[in-house]
Image (cartoon, rainbow, N blue to C red; front, top):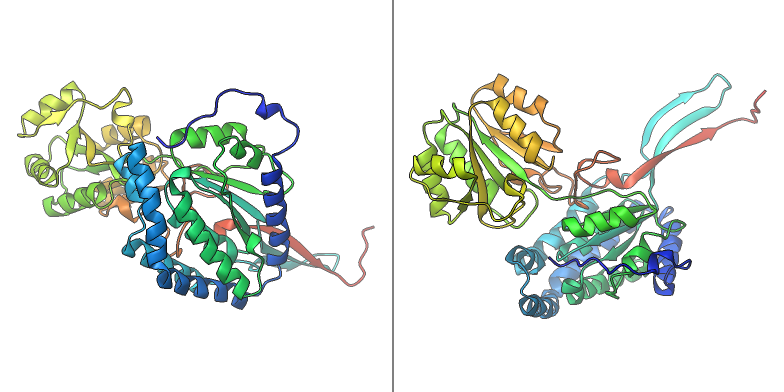
Length: 435
């Protein structure tokens, strides 16, 4: 785990926010006020230049990233975190492409949501407007620096980014490129600010900047999200863990089920939309073949004592759980919980008890069974006959995402451009006064 909770001290009682954070927040607020009047063309020009800069400076980015990878090795960080930390050629190309995709999206600011003429004669419009300043606190994912900075800029918001110390060199290098693109197009560097100091108590200072910051988004492990939620005086949108499940119904076609389960688990096992639990109807005739395919993919299966015995009847070696969380554990590795269920109702009950309301999938040929599964669950996304890995802002056509929100206010699922706006009313009159 990267994020360590600070020791109980009196810093929470200190009246004044740390001067470093105060100045940074003030700068972001000033930038956000200017961004409200920036044209779509100017914002898109920044993103286009940023895309080119990422590709042109990929060797420098990889060199800085290597310092972070060295630190990760010294700290013996989990492999899932190292995988997220790595800036490969593919990841850099993906960041560059994301900037272009965001530039190509319609500007979400100024959209008329509704309009009417009141009995007084005043013409009233409800329009979208930037939130203002968005603070994102995240771990191990330097690509977030570009994705979130780009989304905030396009939606007219200033961004304050606080990455983890394990990604500091990478984040600095990426922020410098963003600042270069902003300067080139006459926009303030404070539009995208990076907190370069790694003191843990600075997070508390940041989430107390109620006059400058409008929204806080924690994206990382449970400890980070819990800490930010408990201490923030600013509204928080949580991007929590993903204990995602795949249910294979008794009528599921074998090849479809195999491909969906393998993709959901092995495509990128270290991310939040990977499958962490496999539920199989005990009447499904292909369980042994699916276990064999998972074994070939080097997936290690886990279950309770009943599941271990059930696995033996299908020629599978199933191991005890790694910890007391059992079916509720988020592995972020090639480990997978498995369980036999008697019906879709039992699968639903299991997910409601152990899931995190992130992503669930069902594989079935029965339309009505699929509808029962979808209607009964309260997850941010439910997939019918497709992989949980599709729960992603880019895959949903959003260009990129701030993260996948698991709460219900004000956004759920991939948090994209439109979710970084609020609304306000504009009233146009001809001298009307209220009687």
